[in-house]
Length: 243
Image 1 (tube, rainbow, N blue to C red):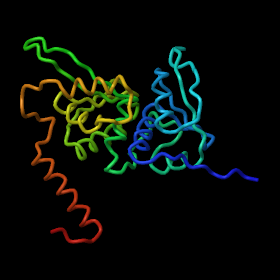
Image 2 (tube, rainbow, N blue to C red; image 1 turned 90 degrees about the vertical axis):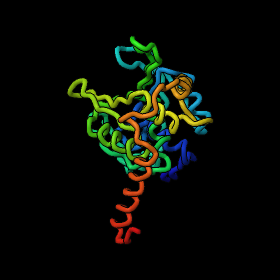
Image 3 (cartoon, helix red, strand yellow; image 1 turned 180 degrees about the horizontal axis):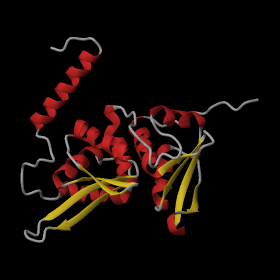
Image 4 (spheres, one colour; image 1 turned 60 degrees about the vertical axis):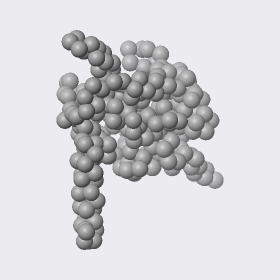
């Protein structure tokens, strides 16, 4: 008798955080049912298990340059098929493109990406000694980061720059004001996330800016105007006359 498919009872913000984490630090097996999530932080994977109600064990594996890492493996064909339906697939590192993420959960998805392949860096300016920050997200797919850059500007109003570090390594980078805006939206109180990056996000969010305007951050009027234009475009696309 064939086994009945079991659905993971993960919804809303936690689901899309998990999708972001799998997009960055996970992989889909070619067998059509296994999903693997890897981290160097054992406690983080245990925290993930607790919050998501998973029963899978966290086990040891050897990662890049034979460094010890930890991973949790999910075996669920329904969840695997869901990931395929939104744009993920096996061996995605260099060929990943757009992911179909609901607007309401984009910031949770983005937090998962940052916890996986992102980084927050702090330093002090050599002249004025003010605290500086940046936010970076790495990927082997330029098309994916190009899509992500556009989505962050559309959904959050922050502008970044895409850098090519090699033929197979790209990085999306945001300056201090843009990083603060992204972090305020993604790392809200009580959110699921990597403890170390939650602490860094708090420090970045509380850091003194020193100026009010930046080309990397859309003003409230610019952001509202862009959203209104997008809404009108969507109405026209389905045959409804915009006001």
